[in-house]
Image (cartoon, rainbow, N blue to C red; front, side, top):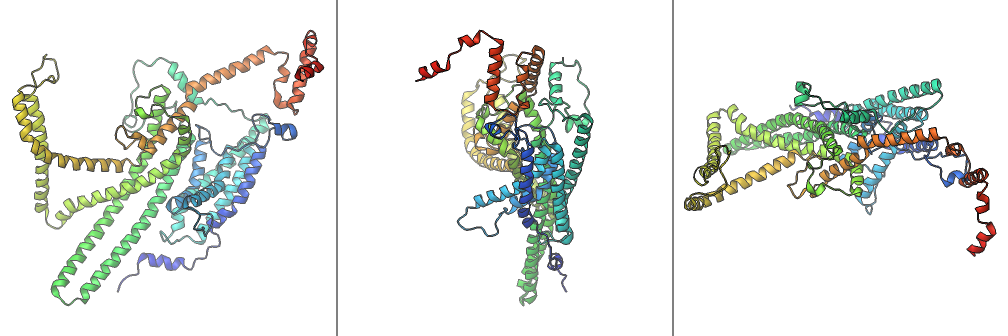
Length: 617
């Protein structure tokens, strides 16, 4: 009697589940409140300058501006709130990454797949737009209120979707809970954030009856410039073991919102990807178990003893392979996940190191082909970096997991299984022979180096020299030495060529998720589009977040405002054009009238209107 497979037990339970809420359909309907929120926030947004539209409709008064969901050019405000907003959309990102999201159920055949994916991405982005716009808008009271309502709706819908049908058809038991709990946690954080923002801004306006002023110069940027102008200490402070080996915190540096959002979303998407990969392995394991049952039934129905023994041996090998692969796969899941999580934090550390070098004017660490990058490539790079980095992390995890699993199987079949099967002596002999062969190859390579140093180089010119000069000695012996080792070096070169290929594959697979480091050889770095994107993003951030440049611009702006306040010219009451709801033509006439009134000699020098017309004719 055989037990019912695990996937059949949860599938039989899930078939009776009728979920009244489908997230894909609700995503379509959520576009309506999303567009309404965008229009409301756009009407409340004030533009920096007046336009001809304000002259035609003075009631606008610079209203109806463009809402910015996220400042990708080096913003430092609301970093963790925006990161959790991205985390709330992680399930949508994973759906697009795994199988693509199509806004239409039946896509016509003449529509390209890339265009359909683009439409799906635009719909997902529009549905998630209010989460970011309500955090970034200047009208914080309205933004926090609308954001709380929109986030609360999504939270309630996802909670009902999970409670009605906690199981699914992919992972099985508690599938929806496993997939959606990171997004629910991010939505809870956003709800609390909107409540805190609403209370804080409302209390501030009630106390001061004005809005809080913001400055483009951040505190950490000013502290960074001050630290540059101080004399370096005579003795560096002692560092702890964590600061020496793992990470040293810098109080004068903050990561922009884009990098924090990338790190949070990459870790959440990596978690979901691991869960989906586990589901795929369950299917492969089920196929292997089915194949094993077929072998057993074949052995039971066979009448020839020799064939029976062969089939039984094959079944035993198959069982051993399935058990070994399952153990190695589960173990390497943790190691590959830990490797990719380490990559995420290491990328942040490399970003800080590279940005500090660029701020100091150092570009020697960049390849020569990237010493100067065009402005258009830098702008395009900063737009695609975050999405590419997340995709690189996910693909890198899959490739690293496969490579680690293969290496684990090789280790198990070479070392562990022979010892478990009582063949440890045979294994040691085989391994010893391989090590002896490799030792011979390496010994001959070292022998050539040692022979060249002893016999074929002239003595040192000075006793203080570390090496002998590059001058040949015993030339006839040298030529004979090269001749007799030529044929051996051909075979040695074949082995080293394969070893070079293996090293290139291993390093390339291990570093595929590292977008901050190229995997191409020197001279071919331009072919690495991921590394090109990283360099373009660095240049963009270096130009827009350089603390010295921003501090200099801040001082210029403050000095200009002080001079305007101190001089108090006769036209000072005309300077604040934002207080007037008049056209540019009316304001120009008032300025002309005031100028002529204060300068009586100017009207006689003005050109008459009739003369102007006659000269124009």
